[in-house]
Image (cartoon, rainbow, N blue to C red; front, side, top):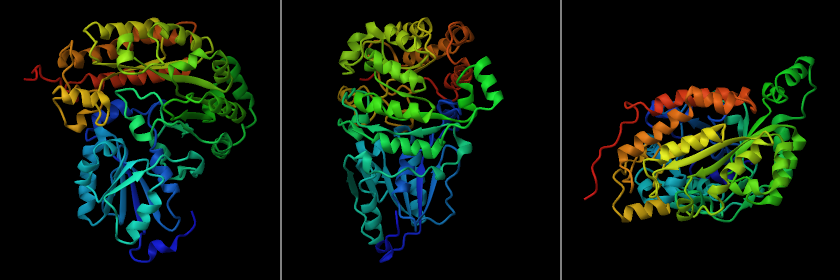
Length: 481
């Protein structure tokens, strides 16, 4: 943006901190933030806010998971955006900056769910998306009249500029790039806060804009030297792409929600000649031509939220696209095209019994998923799961640091909190055992083992942290009165 002189009329705004807080436990941050090709991404929402800030204002993006907040440096206004398990750290940062006279704005999904709580630690809160109200916030700051609450309407993605990638310190993150092509989710799973924040209307970025951004990032594919050709011929055709860092992570919650747009983006990826991975719904595997195009476009992996192996639970959670009896066929369809499958599962649903932990591990190993996250169901504020459990007096912890998907915060129905705690960790141990890694990653036919083997070894290291009683103590067995 060009200079906007009216911001300097009453209260000059010289410096802004855009802060992504981290958990207050370095060990827990390491467990779910280990630097692997699949993890360790910058806060692109803050980089977009930076792009919407006038050029005459100094902006610093601070990732508290990797660097300390520079409290001694001058700052007029700070925007702090974090998830529920980050929010207590966000409040501590806000309180400390506030004592130095910095104006504080808080945003994100947790703040959207509990804005009045957040206002105890800041001057203003942003409810839902920030991009549409950021200019108003800067204008109000310059007049000394910040409002308590700003309600961000759904942003049309075509109107947004390219994010400020120059603010990312690349040494903190994986060697690839990250992009957002869509927002919104029409499904509305009961355990998920995405729809409450981004809305149910599916919005898309124009393929032309995405192509321009990717070409700015990667440029044309360079000529292939003889040694690269040798690697491609004797090891794997994708190796040169990793050497050249032509790797892209698509952040979207569900890349294929709008098939026409998805096909157009896949053509863009194909033209840009990159390798990429991202998230997609189960619906993807019902479209053979889409799967073919994904393979042609350079897709190396898809993260699918299987969530559970119980059809009853799927229906109760309103994740209707999933059909548990089709899961194995879904995985095979992707493997047939040499696309890795990164599955996500949750444990702690009302229908879960002590058998669920081995059932998930057996499924992952038998179907040879390249990676699998098994997380503890977490009643995030604002979700229907939270409303249900809160009304039933089943939530025993409102300490937000515990809402990290590795801590039990509620009383399950058919298992105890301790069974849920240890059972989730038992599943991780089985999935990331050496025997399982051999069977899933190294046994023929294998797909991109050069990529998924180090990822799995990293998750094996992560498992040791998750299972540490010092880092994640087990809950007590007390029951609600």
